[in-house]
Image 1 (cartoon, helix red, strand yellow):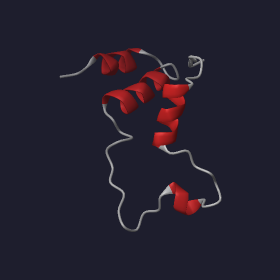
Image 2: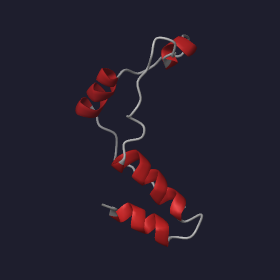
Image 3: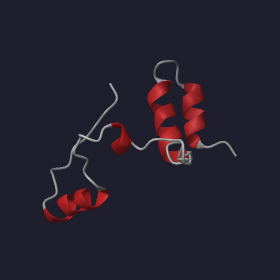
Image 4: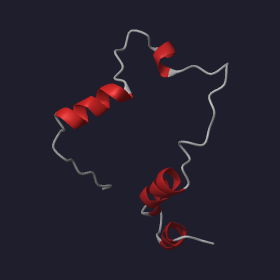
Length: 76
């Protein structure tokens, strides 16, 4: 079954179809979630050990205790 995003991508001329293609890839197909990290792969904290990373637990604390103001983004 072809979904709505594929119809929109096919109907829009380049470069207008690029943002819709990216949204479809990330949020519908889940392309950023469909891979495994193997033994030979490096995690970001191993590549840049001096960088102070924020864990997901720290981010959840920030959003639950003192959430930032909502932001909006647009392709333009």
